[in-house]
Each structure stands twice: as structure tokens, then as C-alpha cells.
Length: 352
Image 1 (cartoon, one colour):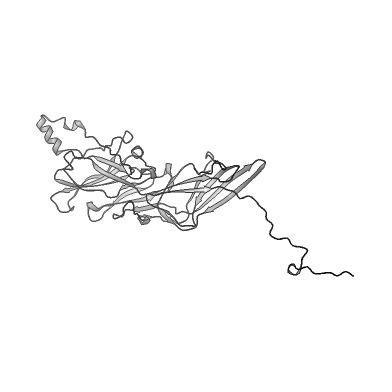
Image 2 (spheres, one colour; image 1 turned 60 degrees about the horizontal axis):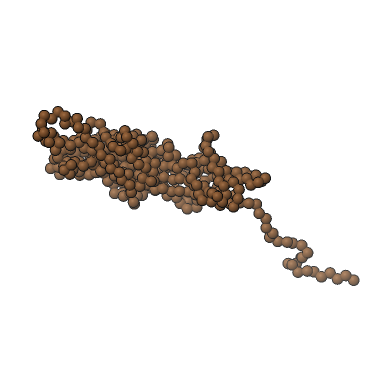
């Protein structure tokens, strides 16, 4: 787990109007600005892998609510953050939001966060539960796509709940603990043939569940024990992605046999809607050429099919490795018939 805490500094100009040191001290104690820390869990598994990447995606969204500490429930809670963008202009080394809010020492707060701020495909909403202390996120329109065109959604699963308005004597920043809720897959190619060069001209993956997904947060879920039941995917088994050879400028993958017996990465990786895939439905179609000396032959539509059910789980990373190994035409002798009849016994012929 990698955590990086980024403080949002309160603007000194806020206190410029104070006329004495005593007044300055009083304002400082009672009106400290609310700020946020953010941490990314399992960042090596995702597209938004660090603070700079999160800043480049527009930062994150915060929702926040306050009630009087003396009140037993949240019936009269005030909304103090509603779809507020926490952002960075310096690659995530510091964070800020517009129109600062301030701590109420007699208040209790709940905060909820989601990222990225401005997704390409999905839309966010908060699903009302019993009260603002038990809200959960919903995402509609999430799509599976290549990393450069997909959204790597993050949510703070636990929220920052029942935060005291005192929040330590220095008014520490609110901790936002992000977790990934999509799945990452990538692809490697190799060839264990002893000699020759193989050029992969096209690689297509079919048979996964396509269509936009809808995510509804389960409040009891934990990052290490998540079911894909949080996701709904409307269309089954029709997904089709061209991994290699998708356009005229797409670089083909050349494999030197034996030298490339260790798998090498294909051009990119993908952020996918988490899902369970039935056995034998996920198929890879590979087109490639194989040349050795004066011999040249093109093998087309060599299909690799997985026989076991596949699971692309929330916050998971799956790597598929394909061994491109065309089979040589070989000959064998099964039987030699002739010079025998009756089950192999010779029939004597008497010559007189």
C-alpha cells in the first residue's frame, strides 16, 4: 500500500483584517479551514497510479455533512460539501478547493469522496440510506476500454465519519482513503519455437461482457473481500477488443523465437468493468506470419480459448500470456499393408 499525504494550506490573507495578536489567536483557534489528505491504495494496479495522475484527471469530489455534536442523530444535518472539486495545479504535491469551509468546534462531520472529478463515461450520484452518516456511491455508464480512454474509478469506501470539529489541536487534514473499484488486464506475447521470427499482425479478444456497467456501493464490503455483485453489466459475451493491429499506424509485434521465449508486453493495457465470465467464452484470435529462410507461410485465425471461468475482480490485475507457436506439418507411418491376407497369415501356394 502506498500513501502520500498532501496538505492544503489555509490562505494567510484570511486573517489579514485582524487588528491585534489577541484577535488573531481567537480566529485561528475557532476558524481553521477544513483541508484534506488523500491516499491511494494498491496504486500499481491502476491507471490512476499516483498523486500526479489523480491531479491530471481533475482531482476528486468531496461530499460533507455537519451536525451539532450535542444532537444524537443526523436529522438536522447541514450540507457543507456538495460535489466540491478538490484539485491540484502542481502535479499533486498540494491540493486545494474553492471557497474554504471552516471547522465548527461544536460540530461533528461526515465526509465522502470519489474520483476522478470529471469522468469520461460514467456519472456519479449519492444513494440516500438512513441518514448522511450512511450514504453510498452509485456510478452509471462505466465502460471497459483501453487505459488511455477509460476511467479508473476510486472511492473512499469507509468515508471519514463522525469527525470531531476539534479534530486535534492543530486541525489535521481529513484523511481520504481511496480504493480502486475497476479491474485491470494486460497482455503478453512470446514464442517458444527454437528458430525463426514471428510477426503478430492482429490480436483480438472476444467473449467478455460488454456494455456500460452500473456500480452500487455495498457499505459492508471491504477492499480485500469484494464480490462483483456491486457491478451490473447489461450485455453478456459480446465484448470485442482489437489489442494489436487496430489501425494503420498500429505497431505490429515481432517475436524472435527462443530469444522472446520470455513474454513481452503488448502495446497497452485495459481498465475493465469487474465481471465473471463463463468458461470457454473468452477467446483470443491471433493472426501472424512466420518466416524461416526460403520458407514463408501465413497462419491466420489461430484461436486460443480459455477453458476455465474467468473473474475480473474489483481492484484486481490479470495478465494473459499467449505463446505463439505454429505447429509444423509432420508425417508418421501408421501401417504398411501388403504381402499378407487373412489377418496377416501367409497362404501357401503349391507349384507342381
